[in-house]
Amino acid sequence: MSAPDDAQTEDLIHRLRGDVAPAVEANTGTTVYVTGSTAANIDMADKVEQALLPFILLVVGLTMILLLVVFRSIVVPIKAAIAILLSIGAAYGVIVAIFQWGWMLDIVGLEETVPIVSFVPLLMFALLFGLSMDYEVFILTRIREEYAHTDDAKASVLTGLTASARVITAAALIMISVFASFVLGDEPTIKMFGIGMSIAVLLDATVVRMIIVPSVMTLFGDRAWWLPKWLDRIVPDLDVEGEHLIERLEADAEATTANESAHDRELEPV
Image (cartoon, rainbow, N blue to C red; front, side, top):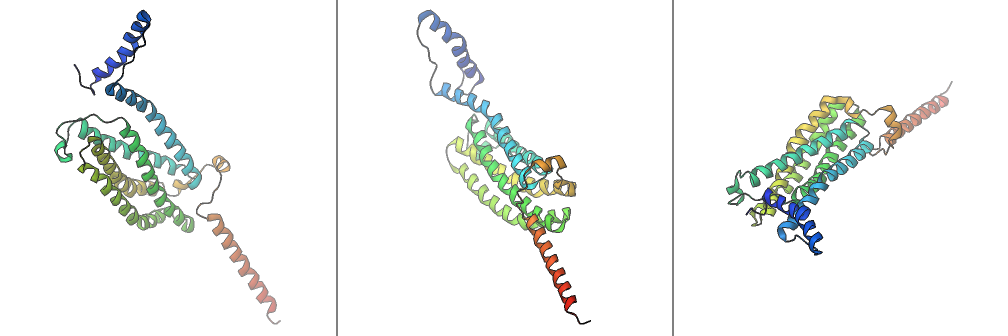
């Protein structure tokens, strides 16, 4: 006999459905079902496993397109995609180390390892992705705004980080506290979700947003905001930061100043 979360149990379920049940149905005309909580959990795990990778690729791909349109940059969406994958990958690793390998089980209040519930990785990715993109857009918007005004890439990163760091840190601390409190519960699944999300937010708000993002933007400099000309013609210009409006206002101000100067010269006595 094998445990419900054992690989042998999953193989048995698939063998009963794939080999034994069709033979019995063909010989007796009886419809055979393999059911129960164990079989249902295995079915759900198989469905989630099939959907996880397409779901991640779809969400990351659409986000890259959106960031490309908003920030009109090649580097920004690629960096954002890699950063979120690093954060969620690290969180998955922590969950595996604790709940499957048994690291620090006493600290989380468990006596033995437990299987990772199939929907936890999918739900973690969805929630972390939303939080991570909030931080990403918040800090990059400030950097982009400063770059549009000064045209100094490195100084813009410093100004944007300085203006955003406290807000991002405070928001992250709130979310980490909320998720960490899940560990106080008795349900292993709730503990698993809480630990995974708190670690993911901690890494994303500190290592990713405060170190990796500013470092990458500083290293690339002006190239971080580069967009190929052929792509520039295709991508709609939403002018989120109002750069074109600022240019028009400055041009109007210069024209008004020039007209006033010309008018003043005309009024000067000969």
